[in-house]
Image (cartoon, rainbow, N blue to C red; front, side, top):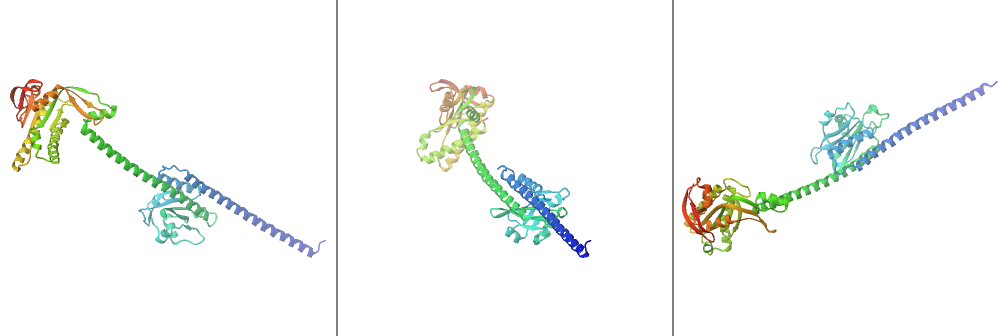
Amino acid sequence: MDSPSEKEQAQKEINYYKERLKKLTSSYMSLEYRSADLAKDVFQMSEGLQVIAELQHIDKDSNKEELLEGLTESINVRLKMDVTLFLIPKEPDSLDFQVKYIKAFASYDLKKALAKTISVPESLYKSKTSIICNREGFIHEFAETLKKELEIDHFILTPVLHNKEILAYIFTGRRPQLLQTGTGILPYHQNILEAISGVVSAVQNQIDRNIILEEKVAKRTEELRKEKEVSEELLLNILPYETTLELKKNGFVKAKEFNVVTVLFTDFKNFTKFSEGLTSQELVAEIDFYYRAIDGIVGKYGIEKIKTIGDSYMCAAGLPVKKKDHAQDAIKAALEIRDFVEKTKEERRKTKEHYFEIRIGLNSGPVVAGIVGVKKFAYDIWGDTVNIASRMESSCEPGKVNISENTYQLVKDDFNFSYRGKINAKNIGKIDMYYVEDK
């Protein structure tokens, strides 16, 4: 039988191995926990890298609002966070930041958080550094403000730097009741967020480039629009509007026949004699003065200016758009032109300045209208009607409006006339002519 001393020795050995087994078990369990934590950290790091990888493939035309909304969702899901949001400056270089793009757990008061304005301390803003808030370790004094305002105990606040300036802050955190240890935010979280911030900055660079490009495109588009307007305005000064549309559509304009229009000619009496005492600049200025006024009167009555040749002005009513009262409108315009020239003559007589006297002739009938040539387009009209209208003008006395029988028959009930009889028109023969008196 074993002695008491042998039994005691055996019990000591048993206790020793029990203690060793206990320690080994404890060490093994500790190692298991550490391995599990490490595996979890490695997994979350890979998830964080996945967020960065996804950002690398964003569409260059992505909307910034949609990008940041999606980014907070990815951070929240992949990094297993409870709340993620962006703090966006209310104004450039402002220390007051607005809460935006929140993704959070179901019971989190989003409306309350979105109404918050977070004032970042100037020292933190200038340092451009991150702050991490956990149960253990140093807690930045501003962390208490964030904990209170955003109601999250464990979080990290990381600046998004763009061109060495703070574009925004990323805020993300966890609730303490879901943590197995006292540390909710780890160093690699900061590394991941800083990498994400770099990608956001790159996206902002692309947005900035797009804005610059869009501004350049908009500026050039506006320049082209103005150039087009100038070109079209110049074209409209040469061609009627309807003819311009046809030319732009087809590249050519077909000649058109008009059954009856009224053609009007004006001419200044003794133009050559009166112009002898003027310099070339003065002569051009004088013609411009009268023609500007005539243009205004002709435009008032919807009459189409055809051309000017020296001191002769030609226009036609009733084309390119046909209208019933073309003869009446042409005579009204003729009387206003006459009155303008006569008024100018009386005013200049008093000041002993140069003045002109005008002859005006009209005729109505068929014409052919169209464009001739391929350079310096000219809209013109042809036919006996035009020739007779020209003879009406040359057969007229200064200060008068002379019309043919054709025009008279169209307006005889609308104006007062004095019959001139049959008067010989060069290369045409005798024609009944009438002077138009006041209406």
